[in-house]
Length: 226
Ligand code: SF4
Image (cartoon, rainbow, N blue to C red; front, top):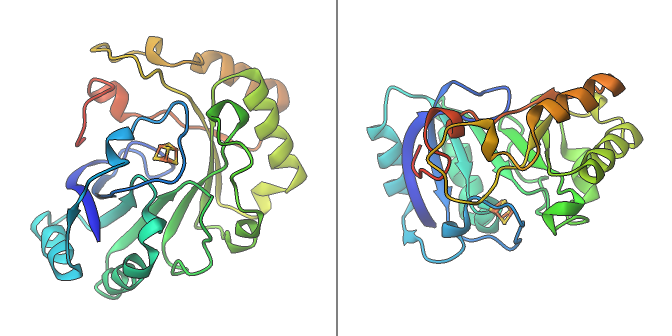
């Protein structure tokens, strides 16, 4: 497998936000979201065997929550899925963060899937694989990154049309962040002010959760490895 980095920090997003977590960041992505904050994963990566990855994870004990992220980790599904099963068997709690464009059916059921549905302003709208709706369970979370009112209305329609709250445990709405370098740990770096998003959610009583990327408030927004 090709990896960018393995490190531990607190989980920045989802209902797991704030929990100590080991991040395994895999190289490569087949999408190009306009607001992507992980472009450094698109190329390169260091080859790791399954044994080496397990050894690196063990060095980061006693943390037992592991997230596979990227890039798009399911581009390396052939090697990743046996690794996830091995870690589950060893008692780890696992998460995977994925774009929604890769099929989820082979991901072990015990893994918490955090699955994007790309909105229009991402430039990758329409990439979500609709078959993936059938693979969701209450362990899973569906995330919309929102940059504009158009994105919000897309997410609202998608949630309602597919009764998403009956398929997944959480629905997350996350304001898009600016890619402009900043040392400020502030909502001023958000492309969409979270207060505006909250107002829209309250108007509609949407069955969703506001999700802020807390690592971008704990550390500087562009800092890597946190
Ligand atoms: S899917 Fe994720 S890693 Fe890939 S371009 Fe979009 S935000 Fe970046």
